[in-house]
Image 1 (cartoon, rainbow, N blue to C red):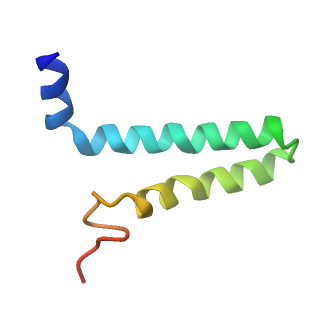
Image 2 (cartoon, rainbow, N blue to C red):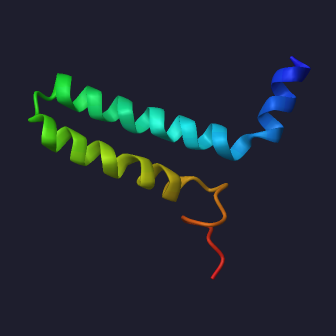
Length: 69
Protein backbone atom coordinates (compact mmCIF):
# COMPACT_ATOMS: atom_id res chain seq x y z
CA UNK A 1 0.00 0.00 0.00
CA UNK A 2 2.90 2.36 0.71
CA UNK A 3 4.22 1.81 -2.81
CA UNK A 4 0.90 2.77 -4.32
CA UNK A 5 0.70 5.89 -2.17
CA UNK A 6 4.26 6.85 -3.13
CA UNK A 7 3.49 6.25 -6.80
CA UNK A 8 0.42 8.49 -6.53
CA UNK A 9 2.25 11.27 -4.69
CA UNK A 10 5.18 11.24 -7.12
CA UNK A 11 3.05 11.17 -10.27
CA UNK A 12 -0.19 13.02 -9.57
CA UNK A 13 -0.23 15.14 -12.73
CA UNK A 14 0.43 12.33 -15.24
CA UNK A 15 -2.07 10.02 -13.52
CA UNK A 16 -4.77 12.70 -13.51
CA UNK A 17 -4.06 13.45 -17.16
CA UNK A 18 -4.39 9.75 -18.00
CA UNK A 19 -7.66 9.49 -16.07
CA UNK A 20 -9.05 12.51 -17.92
CA UNK A 21 -8.16 10.81 -21.23
CA UNK A 22 -9.94 7.66 -20.07
CA UNK A 23 -12.98 9.77 -19.14
CA UNK A 24 -13.04 11.43 -22.55
CA UNK A 25 -12.76 8.04 -24.26
CA UNK A 26 -15.55 6.61 -22.15
CA UNK A 27 -17.80 9.56 -22.95
CA UNK A 28 -17.06 9.21 -26.65
CA UNK A 29 -17.74 5.49 -26.68
CA UNK A 30 -20.81 5.80 -24.50
CA UNK A 31 -22.32 8.46 -26.72
CA UNK A 32 -21.57 6.53 -29.87
CA UNK A 33 -23.14 3.36 -28.52
CA UNK A 34 -25.97 4.49 -26.25
CA UNK A 35 -27.19 7.62 -27.97
CA UNK A 36 -26.74 6.16 -31.44
CA UNK A 37 -25.01 9.34 -32.60
CA UNK A 38 -23.03 9.55 -35.77
CA UNK A 39 -19.38 8.77 -34.93
CA UNK A 40 -18.12 12.22 -35.89
CA UNK A 41 -20.47 13.89 -33.40
CA UNK A 42 -19.50 11.51 -30.61
CA UNK A 43 -15.81 12.19 -31.31
CA UNK A 44 -16.41 15.93 -31.27
CA UNK A 45 -18.19 15.79 -27.91
CA UNK A 46 -15.56 13.44 -26.49
CA UNK A 47 -12.75 15.73 -27.59
CA UNK A 48 -14.34 18.56 -25.64
CA UNK A 49 -14.82 16.39 -22.52
CA UNK A 50 -11.13 16.12 -21.52
CA UNK A 51 -10.39 19.87 -21.52
CA UNK A 52 -13.64 20.50 -19.66
CA UNK A 53 -12.68 17.91 -17.05
CA UNK A 54 -9.31 19.61 -16.60
CA UNK A 55 -10.96 23.02 -16.40
CA UNK A 56 -13.34 21.77 -13.69
CA UNK A 57 -10.57 20.11 -11.62
CA UNK A 58 -9.96 22.41 -8.65
CA UNK A 59 -6.46 21.03 -8.09
CA UNK A 60 -5.18 22.25 -11.47
CA UNK A 61 -3.27 25.46 -11.06
CA UNK A 62 -2.20 26.21 -14.63
CA UNK A 63 -5.63 25.91 -16.23
CA UNK A 64 -9.15 25.98 -14.97
CA UNK A 65 -11.26 27.35 -12.19
CA UNK A 66 -8.41 28.07 -9.79
CA UNK A 67 -5.92 29.60 -12.24
CA UNK A 68 -4.14 32.55 -10.72
CA UNK A 69 -4.14 35.58 -12.98
